[in-house]
Amino acid sequence: MTSQVLAKIADAIASAPTSRRSVLELILQDPQRVLDESFEQLAQRAGSSVPTIMRTCRDLGYPGLREFKLALAQEMAVGGSPLNRRVRLDDDTRQVITKVTRGAAIVINSVQAQLSVEATQAAADAIVAGARVDCYGVGVTSNFMASDLQARLFRMGLAASSYLDPHLQLISAATIGPRGVVMAITHVGGMPSLLEAVDVARSQGATVIALTQPGSQLAALADIVLGVEVAPDPVMPVGPEAYLAHLTVIEILTVLVAQRLGDKAVNRLANIQRTLETRGVDMHHHPRLDWDEDTKLTTGKVR
Image 1 (cartoon, rainbow, N blue to C red):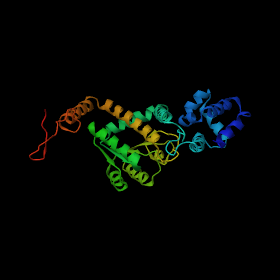
Image 2: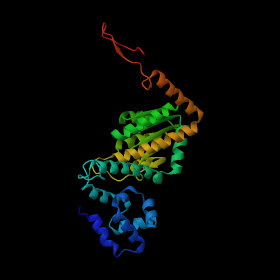
Image 3: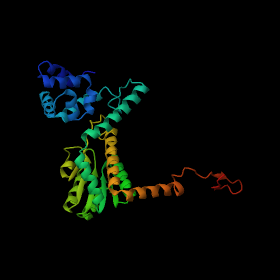
Image 4: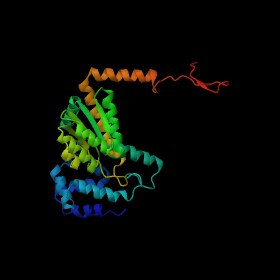
């Protein structure tokens, strides 16, 4: 694959200062790893600093690491499969399994480096203290995330709802009040309808938590930002790596909320599990269904 970005890096190495040369060499050695790393991770590996990484990107003609990553990812995607930027069209099954699972692990691990401890603590505190938690999503992936978080919070005894329709999001925002919490989830962070709902919720005094990319329009409106960024997907506006990262954040947030609720949450979750195991669809031992030859009906006889 002919690479203009990598060729540009190779040309720049000879004349680059020592500190920036090590950064450029790491990019050439493993461009895919660089796509998966944060500013801090790349700087640590290069024995450098975040400002040096920024200057290196500018030397190559990009405003910052994000713009550089976008150009590199788009270029590398040309040689990949139509469904995954890590996989080449001629990779065998074992290579596909290895590359996809390794990529997923890298993305999940990157959450640790990106997620602010302070912001995550503040989000958990706000959710527990909120009189009502309304979860907003936009698009298929974020709608699933919003519904999943709502179900988790509801199981722990919190007054939580999810609103996926823009009209209902506006109604929710207009009625939430100053003790309410809005959890807005979207990777892109720029959907006008969601931004409108968040703006209305803020005008009502609600606390807005955003799970989105740092620097997005949604992040600018939020009181608490759970900022997570992944490399661009070559095919989908929001690829599988974005929702792996978001689901990891939701799991972290769920655990922190449960810790704060203590025995209340533990006992409630245990009771739900017992009920589902004995009366619901999660039973470990289902009664056998027998066919009655006379009535042609099934019965739940246990043998």
